[in-house]
Length: 285
Ligand code: ZN
Image (cartoon, rainbow, N blue to C red; front, side, top):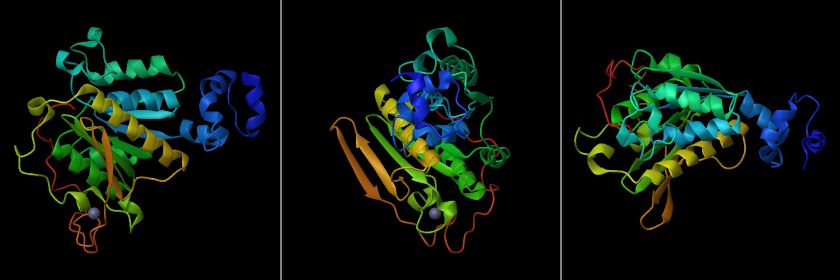
């Protein structure tokens, strides 16, 4: 279909350029998205925590989809060992800050997108303010200190969180919107407290199959776009587990815990003061 042919599918209030109609043609064709859904995406603000293995595909798909403002926070530089999976960066970017390298790729991919790079580490002093500036957060970090910090900040700031994790050949994915109240669980309903340091190996210690991070990052964006466009069945209250070696997906039910310290009936976590100002260093996913 030509760009002009799409005009008939759009409401007159949609002020898309010809280029935008062509760029987002395959979205606009979908009845669930259409011109209204695409306009919603263009008006959306999404924060991606970590420009690593999960963040790389997530950032690229968010940009390609036309999410209007993409924030990314990461304090790391591109290392040769990252390039096996962190596809937002290339060999020429070795030694450069990941937020710079990824921001360049995003701008080159889609000039409609405003990129907000934050070269910093998310910590107790900046998390709430940063999270509050976006509609939705994708957690692509892979250390428990940051995961718990992001989860607490999203609940306290009233933001939806799409969280993923990868290790070796396995991945997990869930959406948390506990700020909306029952029956939505939070991350702490699943994991009340971080595991003791050293109990769960990191990707640097145990390895990770590169494409597994790509699949989970793309699944995160899929769920994020569904939330932003208000379509489909969300993933709140469910956890997807994928084992690449056996090629099997499982979905398990997550329940809100009335005794949860964050979202329970008598919450004890009311701010981020229990979090370290600077979380411990960890390997990028
Ligand atoms: Zn909870």
